Length: 393
Ligand SMILES: Cc1cc2nc3c(=O)[nH]c(=O)nc-3n(C[C@H](O)[C@H](O)[C@H](O)COP(=O)(O)OP(=O)(O)OC[C@H]3O[C@@H](n4cnc5c(N)ncnc54)[C@H](O)[C@@H]3O)c2cc1C
Image (cartoon, rainbow, N blue to C red; front, side, top):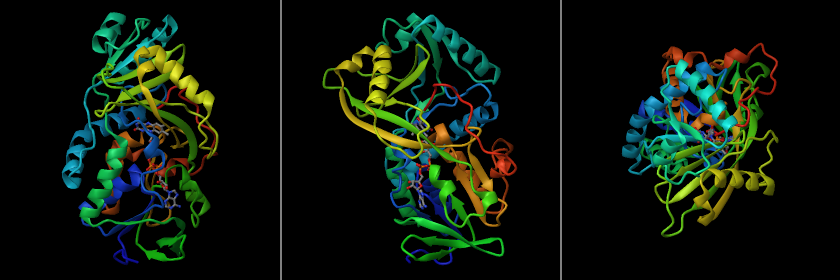
């Protein structure tokens, strides 16, 4: 095994969460290995890369909304550090987001959400239909009003994977292309992991960051198995052909009660998303889902009719019973969770990585993240989450 043995920490899973933890841990001087059979190709690959603390603030999720705001504040510095450490661009763009309603009922829903967001101390701005189109000229003339979220930005989730892998390499993280079959322990304390190929790694700490697969890891005692489940999502990638007008900012639409979004990248690609389906680990791209998504996106931005459809991708969000992540120590000594990031794992990566590294260093975490410890589910029956209805990243 090429990893420094024994390690200070093994991270199980190399999505945006595991790779961010690995890189930040190495920066703080820890000997760390990240293990994943296909790094960056889980939910992280399918995502749209929105960093949307305001657009993602939903009824009943007040604490999560505040965590999302804290996470968004960390992004500019994280993006700068990562670009410098990797010598790669990650497409962080602070262009803001416009939310558009397509009928009076959609408008009323948006008005209610804006009141809730404003009560939380967030800063959405109500817009008339004319103001919406001034902000984004490609919006349909059928838009009846909406809102602007100036603080909701974006990053290219696929460029982040490349950058995290490069930064990890440069900072001494050992990335192992394999699967962890079991977490090993002795006398209630973590001792390392066993790999699918039969090898073992000794480590004083193990961080479970295996997204929606975290609950299936071998060797975890019943009481620390994280209650995460896959929530399927479809994104489409389309591209403006030469001479076709391009979007200037992220557009979210509410179309007769259904949500969609369009996220324009600097290279002319637009990511359209997303469906939310409880279908276990199924990753099939279904014709009906593609149709519904395109129908709603076309209603908001008719110009995409002229775009080329270049990709359909499904991914599995790591959902949790309260739609919030599980970040922190478990009751098994040396075992940490960093999973369940559901709709906002790209947004939450910096704040999660810093919290986990702080815990690995034997320090504490801030109050805003402290309440998302995995122990909050210890005595609960796990059931499906309640919402939000029809809205998804
Ligand atoms: C359609 C869609 C759109 C989204 N849009 C956004 C968005 O705009 N903004 C946002 O913030 N979030 C968004 N998300 C959510 C975001 O993608 C996730 O929250 C985030 O990627 C979770 O990261 P992760 O590293 O925990 O999981 P993943 O990216 O799924 O990574 C988990 C990794 O663990 C590995 N693994 C599994 N089992 C093992 C094992 N036994 N051993 C080793 N490795 C293992 C897998 O191979 C995988 O690479 C979206 C998600 C979807 C599906």
